[in-house]
Length: 284
Image 1 (cartoon, rainbow, N blue to C red):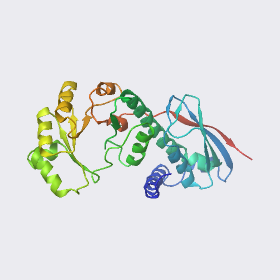
Image 2 (cartoon, rainbow, N blue to C red):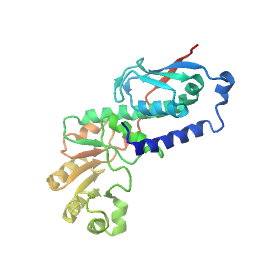
Image 3 (cartoon, one colour):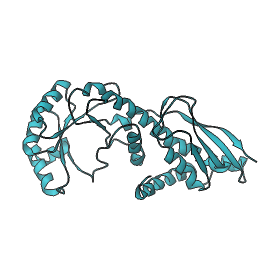
Image 4 (spheres, rainbow, N blue to C red):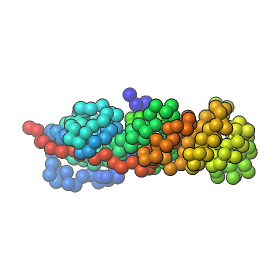
């Protein structure tokens, strides 16, 4: 069950999406269906993949009319093949038509992310390395996209800038070096926060270790540099590999022994999964 506070935030985004799509109503629907009539429509997968976001899909229709009934025939996170009947939606035909595109936009986007995440997670399976997402999300869609990553088999990095200390190249430049940046973070951040440092060279890794970093990000290094860095760290800090990771090269990170692999492509490059609402029936 979704946390009530998170559900409230999601509802705000969904309502905004519905207002964006029909700020003054749906003129097409009201022209062909001026009065309430019961109806049913089928949600069908048109491609193979992982379905994610059925609860969000349902919520779109329920916010338009709480009497709408969505019957899921597969679970969130399930793998489906083209032609699978994913769900059935029953309710006022006007609601089915008005909510169709918004509901599908969420579901297709989230399912695409879950499908892509599943492929990357499979490439790392058995390595002991955890796949995590990044902040490279669509504005206004972070809650939904991160949930899609989870349903696809990935894990979470920090949600946003308020959730943890990650000192990247510009932070280090602003502070005057790795040691100064880590010292400033230790002085200002809550003691429960870990301090992560982005390192682009093995020399920076040594500096971050000396400064007492909890997590060291190995950013855009070669495979050989990352292996050298992991050996240098020797378990004294957690390690995260990052930089241009995607479904094509994720397996290259499986033998490094890093604790985490972060992948922005999960949310910024995943194509949608094709799903469609078909066979609308107007019931008596």
